Image (cartoon, rainbow, N blue to C red):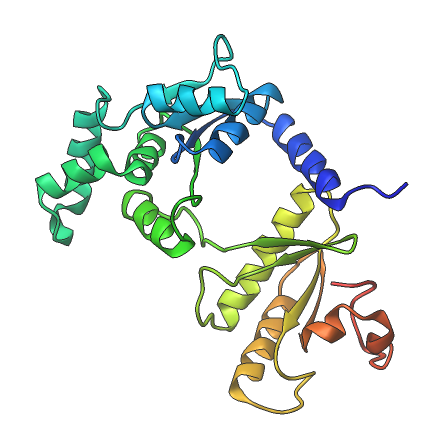
Length: 267
């Protein structure tokens, strides 16, 4: 019997979360039914402590309509408009943004009326460990709002997971870096591979390009080749190769035409 790849992946993710300290996760769009279900499942699976941002009456109403019971489950609800933490958050965020063109009333409105700012402030002030957002707003808008509140501890990358025909593919980075240079490409590969390992998978990295090992030539292909040279000088513990089109990275028969291929399996 074939195992649903998405179910297997979720089991790996949950296992990884359970093995570490329990985290407080704030769900910024807490009034959405899909978010409420996610928070409820997160709590039921004992993965950590979920915090929903929104109006309590509406959250409970939407939860009831979804057939979920919150009583005694331990899911915290924070209303950004009336929270007793607002003054602290506004003071802190205004101090951060006052020399970037923001007035205090702008910051007050952000904290009171925008759940992304409120949730990110919870993380910044140590009252949550991480946040989840992006259900009601597009990725770029949500990211800009969060980055006004939170600094990047180390280089940030975007990692997408594709599940198709029994295969699981990890794609980086199609969301954060518009035109990464060679050093950035190498670092993206290192960070993506590390994340894949935490999910119990063996990373094999293929650097994608319009060209195949220098044919046809071009500046963008050279940037990928330089990233390969950077990795060659590092002590990395994963397979990598490039540059190549996706069809070659995912086709073992096609890769057999290149005896110098470094990958022992599909990327």
